[in-house]
Image 1 (cartoon, rainbow, N blue to C red):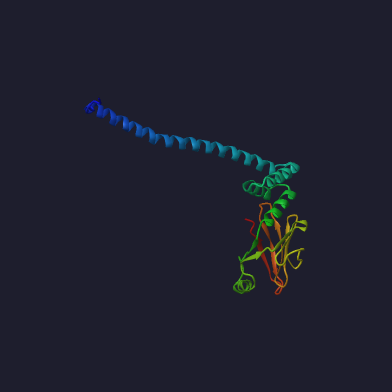
Image 2: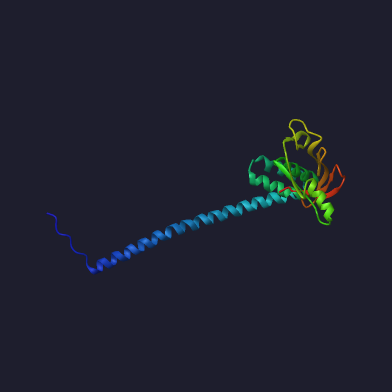
Length: 214
C-alpha cells in the first residue's frame, strides 16, 4: 500500500531553494571557467608563435647571409601563408642584397597587377594636366603571365617574356616597358620601397614614381 506524500515543511522548502540557487550558480561559473582556460591556452600559443616568428626574423635580418637565405627558402617551402608573409616582410629590409632581391621577386610573383604611383608634388597645373591625360597619378597594370626563369612579368600576352610589354626584375632593379606608352626603372631601397622614375615615351616627360609592394 502506497502511503500519502508528506507535505514539505517550511525548512525543507528553504533548503531546496538554496540548493537550486547554488546549482544555478555553479552551472553559470563552469562556462566562464572553461572560457578562462581556453584563453590561457590561446595566450600560451600566441607567446610560442611570436617567439618563433621573432627568432626567424632575427635570422633573416642577421649577419649570416647563407643562414638567412636558407631560412627564407625553408619558410617559403612550408606553404604556410603567414610564414611566407613574415619571411618576405623581414627579407625586404634585410642587410643582404641577395635576400632582398629574392623577396622582391617573390612579392611581385604573387601579384595579379601592380599599382604605379606618380609623385605629383611640385607639378604645375600644365604638368599635372599632362600627367592626367597620360596615365594619371595612380595607375594599375595587369600581369598576364609570369616567367620565373627570366624573372619577367608580362603586362600583355602570354608565353615568353614580352620585351615590349613587361616588368623585368634584375637583383634589386625593376624595368618597366609598355610599348608606345611608358618606360621606367625602379630600385628597391633599404627600407623595402620600390622607387624610381617613369617616362612618357611620347612627350619624354619624366616623373618620380613608386610601385606599391603591399
